Image (cartoon, rainbow, N blue to C red; front, side, top):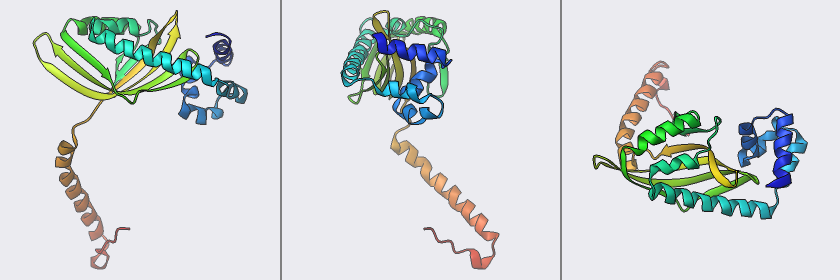
Length: 222
């Protein structure tokens, strides 16, 4: 993981850049903006991540995500603990909520959750994307589908999108942080509300037009 990673970390430390800022700055979007706040010579170092290293990191992380799905499905949800970084900087969000603000809360939350589950299956989508940032940091983005059956026999099927930063440390990969989003209601449900929105919108347009007098009530939309 060697020299290149060491250069990145040392430089970031000297410039007092947090690892979270480092990861954002090295992502594709961040790279387009990082010149605003990262020294140019550091950005140039990032661009030097060679193709071979990128390919190796990408394949390693993809293999790791497969192992995660297997572990969570076979031994059960308690397996999440060893895949979340045991670090105060770890966090996990779901939707708009911060579920685990740190590693300690993740430990307790996973233990409590595991007691309520009889069966669980986790499947990643085919469009699993991995973007290596450094030899030991990578962004993961993928669709997911999960089946859960609790101790009362209730089954839940959920689908969504997962993003995370994976870190290679102490000889293995772990999630440094993670975010889950759950798919919204199906289109048929959303369409039920469209007439309501449209009527409300047209009513507002009509009210606004009435302030300009009879000659101004004809509105042309471009």
